[in-house]
Length: 363
Image (cartoon, rainbow, N blue to C red):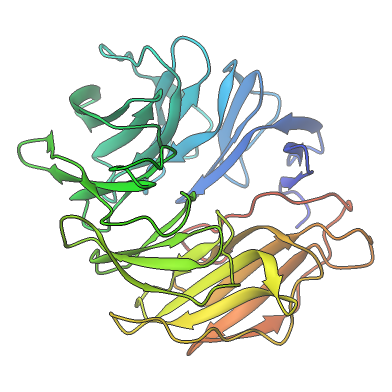
C-alpha cells in the first residue's frame, strides 16, 4: 500500500527496501518479523520498526552479521542477532514501535560465531548455537540477559524450541554416529539446566535445516534430502515415527505443521511429476500419501511460510520469465490448498524470504 515500506530479495540475498518516505536502499543477509515488529540486517547496519515506522534514515551500526542468524521474541520486545566478529552476539530491547532500542551488555558473550538463535515461546529464554561445539541458553529478566547454562554439541545449527519451552531441537551438521544429523536437548525451566542430548536412534537421511514442531510438542518434522521425516521426541533416543515416500524431497526451509497438527505442508527442491508443494495428513503416528495442489509454482520455491492460524500458505518463486508470478498464495482447508489471487510484485525482483506476522493479515 502507498506510504508503507516494501522489501524484495534477489538471488544474492540482497534486499531492496523502500520506506514510507520513498527512500530506497539495497541491503542484505536477513529479514525477520514477529508481533508487529520487522527487522532488516545489512552487512553494516540493523534497521527495526513497524510497517509504518521503519525508516532507512535511522540505521544502527551492526557490522558483520551471521547469515540468517536473527530472531525476534514472540511479543516483538527483544531482538537477538549473531555476528561473525566480536561481539558475536547482540541482544536488544526494542521500543513498542521498534524505532528505538537498548543494547544489553552481556557478561557472558560467545567467543565464537553464533550459528543460530531462537526465543522460547514465552520470550523468557534465548537459545544460541555457538561455533562448532556448543548450545547456550540465556534468560532475559528484569532488564538483564544472563547465561544460565551451556551444553556440548557437535556442529549445531538453528535451534528450535518446542511449543512448551521444555526442549530444544538442534540441527547437527555432523552426521557421524552417534549424532546422526539431529538432537533434542531437554531444558528444565525451573532449574534452568540443559539436559543431556537425546540423539536419533538411526540415520535415514543427511541433516537438513527444515524443522517444524508439532503443536503438541510430541513430534517434529524434518526436511531431508529425499523425503520428509517425522520424529517422536518423547523417546530416548529419538525414534523415527513415519516418513513420506521417496521422491518427494523437502526443501530445507519449507516444513510446516498446521495449528492443529493434522496437516504437514512441505515444498520441494526436486519435484515429483512437477509438484513442488506436497500436503500430508498426520494422525499422530503416520503420514498420508501426499496431496498436490492443482496450481503449482513454475520454478523451485525459494521460501515458503504458513500463517500462524494455519489458514494461508505463501510460496516465493523466482521463475526465468517476468510474466510469471513470483509469489503464490493458497487458502488451506481440510488438507486442501486452493490458490488465491496475489497482487503482482513490483518491481520485478527475485524473492528469497517470506514471513507472516502473527496476526496473519500481513506478509
